[in-house]
Amino acid sequence: MARDKTTNYTDLIYIGVGTNLGDRLHNIQSAIEELKAMNIVVIRTASIYETEPWGFETSDTFLNTVFECSSSMNAMDCLKALQFVEKKMGRKKKLKIGYESRVIDLDILLFKNQQINLIELTIPHPYLTDRQFVIIPMDELVNDTFFTSLSTNFTELKNRFKDLKTPFVVHYPPLVNE
Image 1 (cartoon, rainbow, N blue to C red):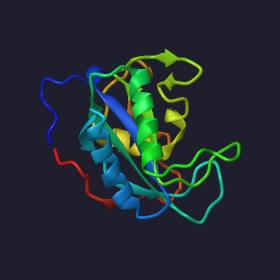
Image 2: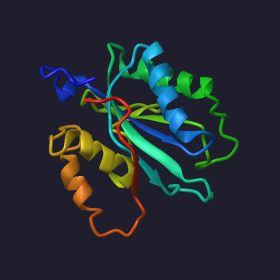
Image 3: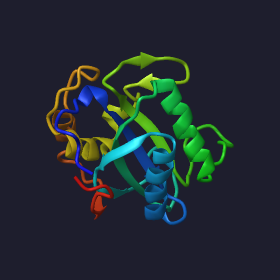
Image 4: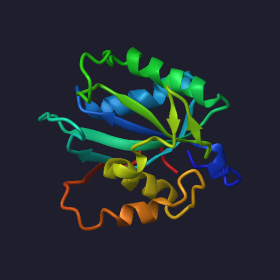
């Protein structure tokens, strides 16, 4: 589904998606349907990238992408909806501090270009500018669009990673066509 030409980036929600357990592609496809059932419409997806784990050790590589979404809900309700979808899809409560393998991980990266600093929710996502597996797909969706909440654009952020040797392989075409 193509984005309506009148839609402004300040009206959109960007959700980072990751999975490294089970049928990873199916997990991403299921997340789109589950979000739709929660009144979060996935307008477009970036390509899906296979990446090494970030912040912990495991032999299970991740599939990562970003969803460009719209919804009338506020940021806290969106967070609760994402947590509900994660739980419904089989994400287990963390047993230890830090990162671990997961069926699905859904993170609000940007929410209608707002800045939010609450105990349970920080937007822009606090690690947004540090994670190549988020910056590359975001750049694919929004290119050099300037986000006031970040004081930069994703093309500039992507250029910081230009010389890294990190494996970063495109796996599948976008799941929702423009």
